[in-house]
Length: 264
Ligand code: NAP
Image 1 (cartoon, rainbow, N blue to C red):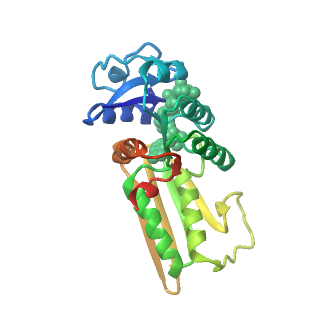
Image 2 (tube, rainbow, N blue to C red):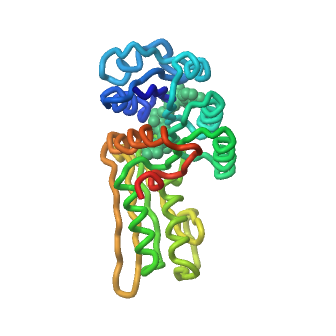
């Protein structure tokens, strides 16, 4: 039975993780950590009835007392960095979906995990369809190098653009080589109208109530366009990837970045 501690257990994704782990054979919610809802039962808060696991704020104590094997983190970028460090120091494997962690912090966490021999998974998108969308975008970029990324999320998301959009732009840039797309825009009448740029690829972020997590990559070529779109229509879409991460991390000896590393 894999013992899992969920950090951010009272949040939107954390509650989904509590539900998914508790219904998956071979793993159990051993602990729940969050800044809010302390003293509440994590299962009741997640809407599945009491699990006998109380939400607490003190991660290191919870990791030690429960003898956890895996920590699943969906919190905030600044909180996650310390949580991952604490987990590695306690020899607990981090499985992390939190986005917005700066690249230099990710590098440092990778180094720490190698030094300690503790496996982990950090993935900006745990939806398997989204991983395929990024993979297909990489293939398309070899033939249609002009591309823009439009990502659409619920209006409570605190970072923009999404980690997935940034990763997609990196993949497109790596696959299209030296080819660049022409942009005739000379006058930008409204700041941000052409979106943000990563490696010369435009990323546009839309935030609206009613959305969950969506992304469209549009490629343009002579007389044609190709759109590759993925829609997470509920947060359940991330759970098969998270459960896969919990199982596979047991075999790892360092942090891997991206769910693709576990799939392809
Ligand atoms: P959310 O509803 O705001 O949940 C975050 C939770 O973390 C909140 O309950 C927050 O508590 C708690 N928290 C903050 N600092 C903490 C700490 N130091 N220790 C423990 N808990 C802490 O956000 P969400 O929508 O679940 O999203 C969480 C993260 O997951 C975001 O970075 C989002 O971009 C990412 N995400 C990733 C994927 C993926 O597939 N990788 C999918 C969806 C979302 P308070 O509210 O009390 O501060």
